[in-house]
Image (cartoon, rainbow, N blue to C red; front, side, top):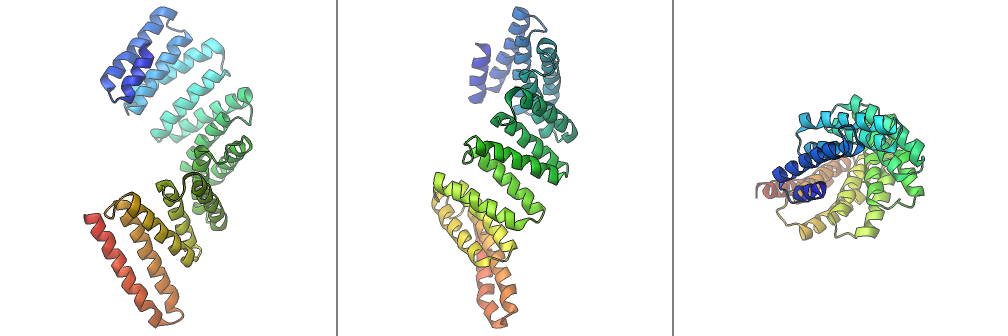
Amino acid sequence: MCTDKAREFFMEGKLDEAEKLFKAALQEAKEGFGLRDPHAASALNNLAEFYRLRKEYEKAEPLYLEAIEILEQSFGPDDIRVGAAFRNLGQYYYIQRRFDQAQTCFERALKIEGRVMGLGNPDYANTMYLLAKVLSQQGKGKDAEALIRESIRILEEAGLGESPACIQRMKFLSLELVKSKQLAEAENLQRKILHNLELSKGWNSLDTTAAAETLSVTLQNIGNLKESEELLERCLTVRRKILSEDHFEVAGILVHLARLTLLKITSDIKVNNDLSTPHLVKAKQLVNDSIRVSNS
């Protein structure tokens, strides 16, 4: 009861009340079941997660570690509950940018989940995604790319290829591909993301315009300026409609359009210097508009 009420208080933003109840739940578990009982481990983990979300990191870590110790003693080192606890601890280390420790935790969780749940389980794929993010931060791009591809494959085979979780992972993979200069594959993946969002949310959605904006930047980088401009113009229209004329995201699109117009100037100069003048005028206007929006 204390835990449920604590979560309710947390969702309502009543953090002091939530903390008191999470602590009370821990005390009740220790008194009712024993200091080394799994109920105590669950309460320890709940309190640790509360402190992690509240960014009181120094309080969270010892609670995570104590919970893991109790679970390993109670169920053995390969129990799924131990795996879940390691995944929580890995997320804590990731936020702290302690990537080596996060990697160790996620690898331990992945090994347990693979053995218990099976290699095709979406939860297993989720931990794989978390590990891929760590490897990316460590500069291990190829390893991260391989893991995220496998994570996406698992979700697609489970019928979750159009789910928000899968689209999120596709976005991550597309960024990795751009970083490694695999622009053609990044373009194809970004088109797939945009298509899925068009079908699920339509164009009157900020998520769809964000995907279109990402694709437009990639198209600029490979020289497809015409389609890039068409996408940005459409994004601009939608964002003005959903947000407002003076919103900073509108200013962001104007900056992208100004950059694209300057790229067109560079292209036109190679053909005919006179063709660049109208683009230069447009670029100046776009920059001025973006500054006006940013200052309003």
